[in-house]
Image (cartoon, rainbow, N blue to C red; front, side, top):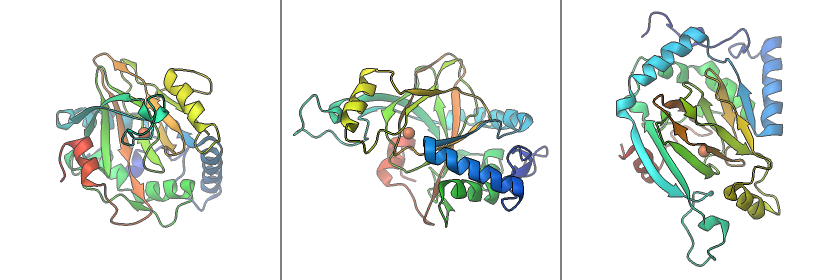
Length: 268
Ligand SMILES: [Fe+2]
């Protein structure tokens, strides 16, 4: 355990984000604002969530485990479904997007490390659950995917897609030398002209495409099943590092073996 940051609460900017006092006036106001932002925009952005010194220590810790990253280099369609041979070639589900991303599994994080402390901190879990309107709310029980670190090295990217999971929590930890922008188009899923709009995005139309700047220290709560998104290609020597914190509405929930093999190259 780090002497400088004995607890997760010393890492979080609780002056700006009093997440550990949800009953207080400031805590209630924060929650209300976040809930509204998530509902209207499909995501909630919390800049400067991690304090600068803690951010530096978290980045150092993450850079120390990069050798344990497993890299997935593949293609997929925007819905992460298998291609249907009965559909015509021009159907949007036939379009393949490229993804090259590494991930450091949960069991490779330092056991008493800072990221783990943050993930295991109940006030953070409870805050996120409240923003999402989920109760009860649990940490994800997957031994590899509960909390992992996404690693985008030179050439890394994540093609356009909708997530399988309803929501994703990420921490912007280390900005890459170049590229690695998070882009998204809110409000497409479920529209009558969804296919047409998704087709336009995949063809490179920029209408409606939003871009989030990479600001280290920002926590992002994102409804990825409803919102198509991607990470643009990274280049340069400094990798883009983004811890992913997973939660679930049920205890004991885990990934399928298929997903574990895809992202971490092993089942357990
Ligand atoms: Fe995603």
